[in-house]
Length: 327
Image (cartoon, rainbow, N blue to C red):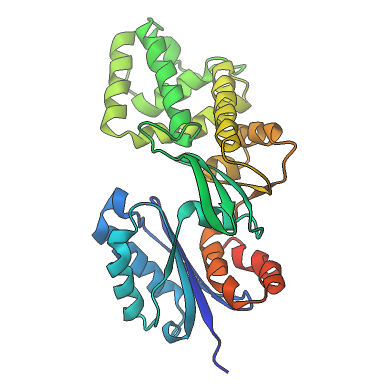
């Protein structure tokens, strides 16, 4: 008997994941490819990445067996519609995919409940209220330049601002970039950030060091997001500045969540909140009165959402862990 299949796609600004499942939850294919956000990377690159992932994930002859599919995508989905229709047709899939925003998919990666909230912090940040598996309300998620408070980018920018401010006030270059990292935690974040930007460079004056960091950050703003891990490292070592940034990030994130949360579980998503570290710990402490879960595989969640209408409600709920298990 021919086995029906469902396809789930998590298409983001960093990577693309495609999960293929049978209706009983069995995973029969999974693949990763490059970024597929048309707003961030352009239509051609996004379509190419998604096409590569679908091709690699589908089992031989699997296309005609696909009975439902869903794409979770950040960015402008409308311009991708004809490209996705083309890709699906190339693989013999009779019907094009259903679309959902990446926030809805991220929530479903952590809960089978129809109503609840998502708190996301990765490179970006925001919160969403989900009602009946549909996106009902969003807070923040306004992008790295003017929003995403509490995100990895925001955390990194706070650290870089602190270093630049210290150099502007005359902190000696030797104190920013000592031969050995400071012991006892204090000053560690400044040193980690200084090394991240300057490496073996030793600018002649504090002002020159600060200006160099500014120029490097302006040339590649994503270098700021990479500082988030350094803030966590320094906070765990007890650096007071890093601890302060971590707590401020957690406070902002939970305040954003409170704007949308009504009832049900709170799903934590994004690398800042799904990885063990001080920001997650601080957020969990602030949410001690809530039911909190952690997002698992978003591509599997998209496949589950596409399969759910085809299954009895109780069976769909029972199969949620099988669909969302991390690859």
